[in-house]
Amino acid sequence: MESCTSMLQLKQIQAHMTRNALITHTFPASRVLAFCALSDSGDTNHAHLLFSQLQKPNTSIWNTMIRGCSRAKTAQTGFLFFCQMVQKGVEMDCRSFVFAFKACEQFLGVLEGKSVHCVVWKMGFVCTLLVQNGLHKWCDEAVKLFDSMLMYSDVKPIEVTMIAVLSSCSQKRDLRLGKTFDDWTPEDAYELITKMPKDPSAAAWGALVHACRMHGNVEVAKIAAPRFLELDPKSAVSMFY
Image 1: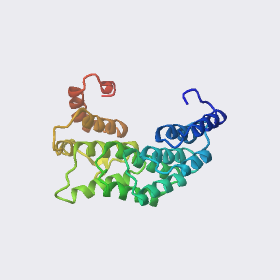
Image 2 (image 1 turned 180 degrees about the vertical axis):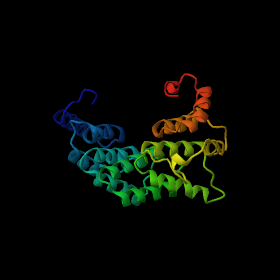
Image 3 (image 1 turned 90 degrees about the vertical axis):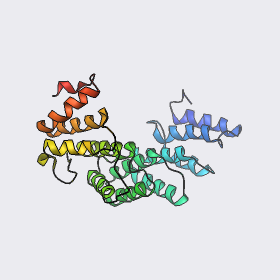
Image 4 (image 1 turned 45 degrees about the vertical axis):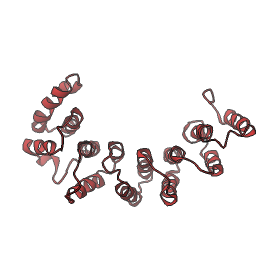
């Protein structure tokens, strides 16, 4: 598989694997399917055929199908694969949601994206940074999820949640969190960061600095940048502030 560069070669490899009863094994099957679904030389139709022949595809294989469809002009099919995962009760990981969000972005499926958010919440992935980074085109929903956490006394936003919301919204130049970023004062920014249950890390301050740079908010940067540099002196942030 390492030297495979075309579908012709892949089908020859697959034929050899079939003769030796290897194609039913998860790992070799996942390698073949990944080439079909993700490679520029692949074939998504062949990936679908191979997937349909697998009795118990694991999470990684499901993720590959969602990701492969989101890269092609079949993004809606990628979302349908995600729906099948939910219906069949297949165990999901962070990548499942990230690729599902990507698929929704491709065909501008706002309602579909919101349905993915619902699953994120129900399955307890809302505080996962990787998933929230996948929300960078869904800033409004990211803020709603953040606000909904604050509504419950037993649900407290952890540092990774703060970083995620700052990162996702800064990508869209829309960092609101209850009010527009332009209306923030240095006190507001400091209050947000210091509300974290633990001492903010360099990543937390860095996310705020990045947002400041994108929005041109020098006042907030004067608070965030020094703390960031204190925790991460090798950072290139000094070139901007």
